[in-house]
Length: 478
Image 1 (cartoon, one colour):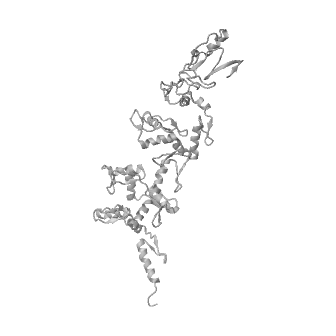
Image 2: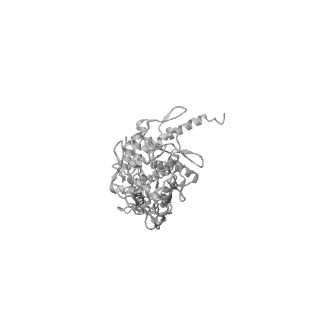
Image 3: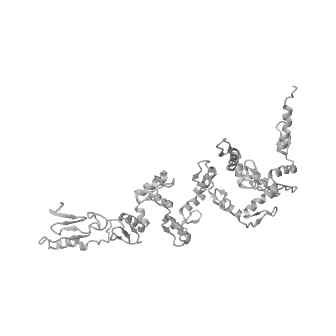
């Protein structure tokens, strides 16, 4: 037993009393707050006197002062917690527990918590940024971000290391935090406990619901320091800032091309995989991007308010008409910087530029042939399978390539969309029109390697080369 000046001292929880000056105590109501009576806290402050022993109390002035200092009636009430020395006090104080001992209530915002330590962590929200700045002793060595708890720093470091130790049992996703995994699992369970009071939309994540509410309030708290543009979400601001910095952190592992946004990289990777997850509900045609699907859906609309003045063909979008008009005008605004060749569409220019780089990212798994475009690979694969999916409804003829099928249909319809700008003659196919235009220009691009003679048409060159082949062939009499 501890002695103070030769007098034994009785200890009850956090309270120490000299035996010759005070009465013995017992711990009354131990366990009411969900803990043992030996712990400091609410139980230690609910001491009750057992019985005073006659003649043991000190009636001197000094004894009365000591008794007044330690009497249970003068102690802190059970619904208040005395803060540690040097620590800020929570504005609402602490309401320790409900009668069942399950809830801890914050008197500032009325939020409840299952454990006292969770409530103490929550206090920091009300204590302000100055307090938080002093109470973040754990700093990340990579990005210098600070945290109040070591566990949060440990979880944050996994972002830099790429460590995701919590896998989802339903899908192949992994997470760096257990809480994020639990939130994700609501997607598979169909749980959406958070409801927007404005539009009744449900969310599985509280943070997503709060971000969604800004649509109704118009709040855009995240502002770009470079141009002043504001955003609802910090992720949108971060992606926007890359426009100013030029940063492109997301790279394709197949071709090395870099992108500012992860979603753009995801769409790009479908080029290599051939995936087209978006399908048209009208005709079943599939697309890689949602924008391409939306543009395609307009083709099913009966209304096509943009007609071509030259051929009468109508379009649902003004942009499609503008691109179509280049067929008649011969306009080719997109130029190749390598060879000067021009194109009517930007997509055709990008495909052409692969000729200069020699890149052929699409390979046939049967024969190993490589192609610049995925469409060419698919058409080539039909040589091995014998598939001819395009059938003419007029004559029943089938085709392996959609281009040949469309050209064939013009035989039945009589359509000749390609016109010579010099004489006005029309053609069903683009190739014959180009050959015809060489009559007006006098160009003879096809030259014989043996005699150097030039020809306007490739087939004329092939017939000419047969002449040289016959001359070189030895006679039977020789």
